[in-house]
Image 1 (cartoon, rainbow, N blue to C red):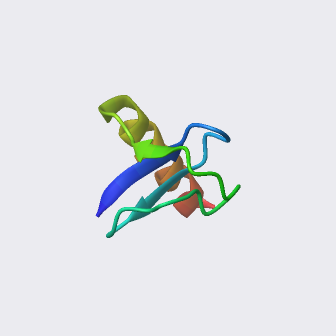
Image 2: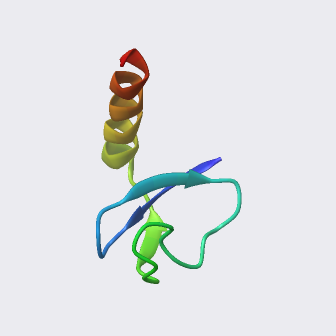
Image 3: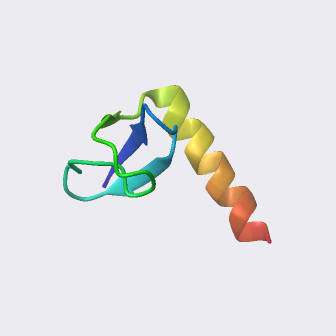
Length: 51
């Protein structure tokens, strides 16, 4: 699984295959997330699971 971020809306998500567009806004400005963005994504997911 890889982590991705949309440059247009900053939506962060994971996929097992490379996406061609953002699942949130539909734009094609998607790239792999860097290490800092991945850490932020994981932290937010952990907080989400607590609720």
